[in-house]
Image (cartoon, rainbow, N blue to C red; front, side):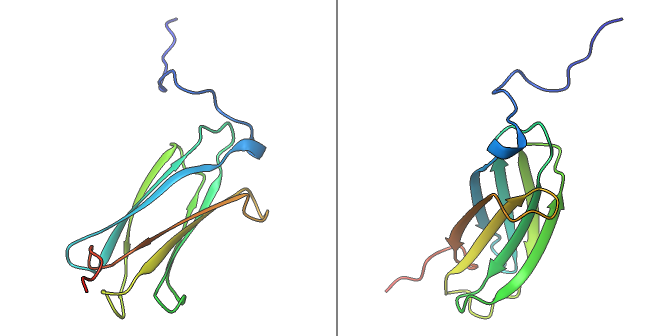
Length: 120
C-alpha cells in the first residue's frame, strides 16, 4: 500500500515544552471594524491552544477569542471590533498554552483600527 503524506518536509516538530509563537500580525480592514489576525507558531508535536485578545488604547479588553488545538502552524482569524477611537493604538495579545497551564509564550503587537497611524 502506498503511503500518503499530508505535510511538507520542514523543520522537525518540537516537543510541548519548546513550542512558541514565532509571529503575530494584525491587519485592520478598511472599514475599521474588523481585524485579520495571523499567528505563526513553531512546528509542534502536540497541539497547543491560543488565547487571543485585543485591548483598546485604555488597555481595556474589547474582544477575545480562543483557538483550541489548531491543526496548522499558521492560524488566521478575523475579529470584529468596535473601536472607541480608531485613531488611537490598540494591542493584539496572543498567549500560547496547553490544557489549564499558564501561558508558556506571549506575543503582542500594536495597531491602529483605521489601518494607519495618525499624522501630526
